[in-house]
Image 1 (cartoon, rainbow, N blue to C red):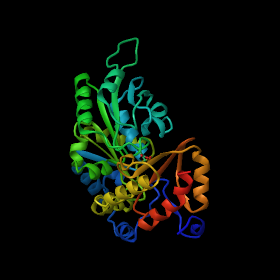
Image 2: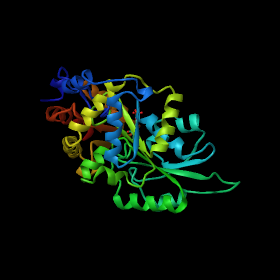
Image 3: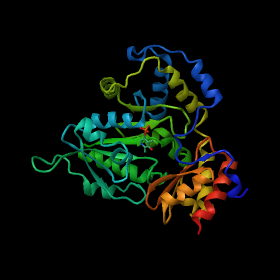
Image 4: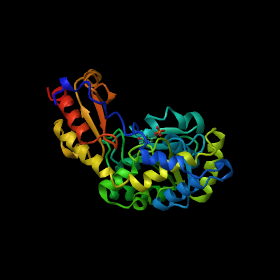
Length: 343
Ligand SMILES: *Cc1c(COP(=O)(O)O)cnc(C)c1O
C-alpha cells in the first residue's frame, strides 16, 4: 500500500502506549469484578492487585493509584522532606513531565545530571549528590532512576549501574526511587526477574496503563509502613477511590495476559527503527526516537496519511509500539514514514 492510498485506512496511533483501549476480555473482567469501598480497605479486587504487584516486585505492600505521576509523587515525598533535594537525570519523567509536582506539593528541590539517552551512570550520580550538606548547600535526600527510560527512547538500565547506584545510596544514606512505569518492558527485554530489577529501591512505581493495556492505574510499592503513609497522602490529594475494583480488575487482567506479549511490541519497534534508517539498537524496547530536521512538519504530514506520532522537540519524534498496533499497522507506518524520514 502506498502512502497516498492509505488515508482512508484506520489510524495507526504511535504517539504513546497509553492510547490502547481495553479489549473485550479485559472489559468482561472489569464488568465481573467483585468490589467494595476501597477507602475502608474493602475492595477485594484492589487488595488482590496491590498484593500481586508487591509480590511480583519483591515488596511488602502496594497502593493503587489513578496515575503513574501520583505513584511517583507519593514515593518521592516519602523519601524527601520539604527543602531537601531529589537528584535525577535531566530528562526524567519526574522532573520533566509531572508539571513541577515535587516542588508544588512536597516543597522538594531538584538537581539533575546529564545523560546519554537516559542511561544511568553511577559515577555521574556520585558527582551530583550532596548528602548532609549542613547549613550552606541543599542536602540531597534521594535519587530517582527511570527504567525503561521514556525520553531516552525506551532504554534499559544496566544491572551493573543499578547495583552501583544502590551501593552509592546505601553508603550515603540516601533514598532510592524507581520510576518503573515501563519496568515490564525492561523485564521482557532482558529476561531479568522483576524483583531483581526492583531490588534495593525504597519505593517503586509501575504503570498498568502503558504497554500492559489497562485503561487506568499504577501501583506504588514499598514497606508496609511507607505504604500506610502513602495511603494517607493519596486521600489528602483527593485520589482515594471507592468501588475501584472495576478498574483494578483491568490491571489484574493485564498482569495475567499482557506482560510476555510485550516482546511483540519490541520486535515491531526494531522493525520500525531499521526501516526508518536507525539501527535496531536504537529501539531497545517499544520506543523509537528519531532525529529529523523538522519534527512538527513531519508529524503533520504523517497524520495526513493516518499515522500519528509524537513531537518531543523541534528535531525529535517519538514512535511507540503497543498492543493496538499489529503487523499491518507497522507496515502502513513504514510506508508513510519512510519517504518522509529518508529524504
Ligand atoms: C507515563 C509515565 C509515567 C506516569 O504517567 P501518568 O500519565 O501520570 O500515568 C511516569 N513515568 C514514566 C517514565 C512514564 O513514561
